[in-house]
Length: 339
Image (cartoon, rainbow, N blue to C red):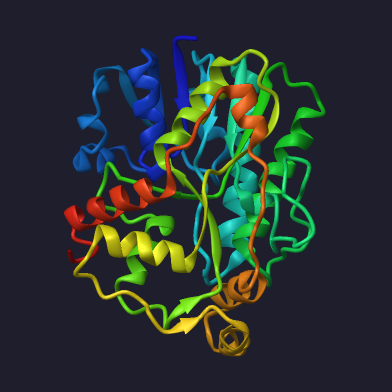
């Protein structure tokens, strides 16, 4: 394969995927909503190999806008999708762009005769409320989210299901899906993505204390490499749960404290029975998206099996604490948090 289309090129993860592809010698065509703005920011131009990167405009809500960008490409990484816990209109702001955009990109890929599409989905499409009785695998699907309950999770689930439904018509290309958990790490741009923001918020007093929350972390560069490997591995198929170490909020705060000794971090112990009950009660006073997230995740410890991605793609994960340290240093550099 020589030319790969990457949608949402200026995104946190997509920019790293582009860097990975350029390092592997590919020509890359990236879609952006505004080419003028992307060129002005110039972040992508600083990536080594950027002379092999072409930027074109496309919009998730304008289906035909992906037809021309897909022409001449042998593969597509569909990475563009809105990410926010709270929005004014979940259907308009999350579901429509995610689902209609996915359908538009796949239709464009079919018309262009590409060989493989790698779709960036999410752990959100695997679970809305981590179960206590088994380790999550690629066989699990989120069955609980809705427009009212974790709408971002709902959008990611509907978008991935739409992609697999599209494949039932045998469009002529293979589909491989990557389902990452909490993606953190250094950024090519000053824009603060939602996952790194979680860490930044811990230094800004957003959290009243140490809550009973647990996340599966994955370095953004590992997720980018997973996409490249999914592209290049002929036997890759189906979904790939993409997550490394699992850390509690207490462990996450400890990692941040080691990276940022002077930072003011949460210390009040709310990661206990009484604290969890209090957080659930207080969640009713939070914005709807944040409240729904807290009620479905507080007190739960997700367990997952990443054997498939390690076996099929040969992917190994960076330690979460190292990724947290690099993310923290990067956010200090961009001015998002104080050292």
